[in-house]
Length: 143
Image (cartoon, rainbow, N blue to C red; front, side, top):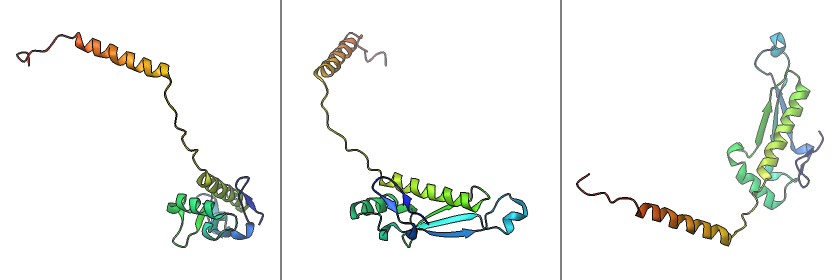
């Protein structure tokens, strides 16, 4: 099997991905009972040569809920009746999952409010305060 490119930095070697086939359920007539068109891919990120140590730790943390007890990431596809198309779909799913898991959020840069925005906020606070001061006082008898 060919290598699976994830992004510019990471490419999963083809020999690390294990493929199994099974009979797919659902509609398809008698073909369902005799053709193994469902595809199941297994990849172990903990021992993958595609990842450096920092990416491996990050990926294992992000995929923690999707990994099996043995540490495998399992992706299945039985979208079509064709085994080849299901294999391509499962590979695309695997690439999308790994790419999304490797995506790191950009760190927030601290910014300060502009002088004009601070003045606007204080001016509005003073205006609201004046509006409330001009309201008639509520006496205890009315309650």
